[in-house]
Amino acid sequence: MLDTSSFDIPRFLARLALFSDIEPAALERLALGCRLRRLERGETLFRTGDPCEAFFVTLMGQVKLFAISPSGQEKVIEIVGPGQSFAEALMFLGKPCMVNAQALADTALLEVQRQPILDELERDSRLALRMLAGLSRRLHGLVSDVQGYALRSGAQRVIGYLLNDHQDDQGGALTVTLPVSKATVASRLSITPEYFSRLLHELEDAGLIEIDKRNIRILDARRLAAYSGG
Image (cartoon, rainbow, N blue to C red):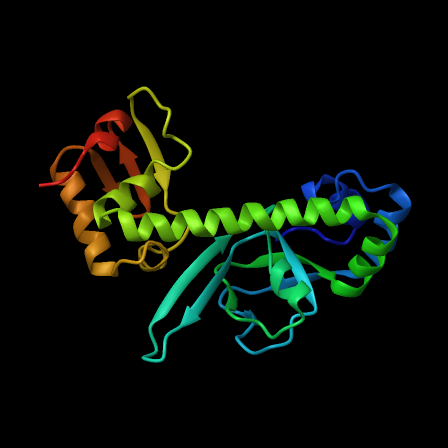
């Protein structure tokens, strides 16, 4: 677990794109409204309907954002890893949380309270522009996800997930380690765990990947990207 006993909150805030150009005095004021949080694996951070008075930055570990359908089925919205933030939009809306947040591993978070940010927004309009840019990027990413689910087949979603950050590779082998369980990845891709496993084995049978628990060895990235299924 991350040693937070000497954690320098103002210095960490300065490394976030959201606050990168803020003067040191403002960072010190923002830091007064922050606190470090620790969650054990499986622990809930917030639930749908809870008040949202802060946003969070993952320092280590992973947080799953998910919704529950009326039938009780879980849909993973996003998996938030180290250095990523979440709940900013909910915080500014001043409305209850619309999703649930749960730690997928032992996790350390920085909680950034709403009121100090509002105070700084009154002092410095540049902060508002940076926050708008950050929220716009998040919205663009979610819209791209929805488009991907609607326009791509299940196999294309799985291949796109495996090749994430490797789309420009000129062939060759590489290994992808699933950061969470296969069931969680499947939910993130809007497919069933059974279908996800079947697609992985189909890709393995086609000689495109090798599966070793959570380690997926891609034998040829270019061939995998071009694969369309049987």
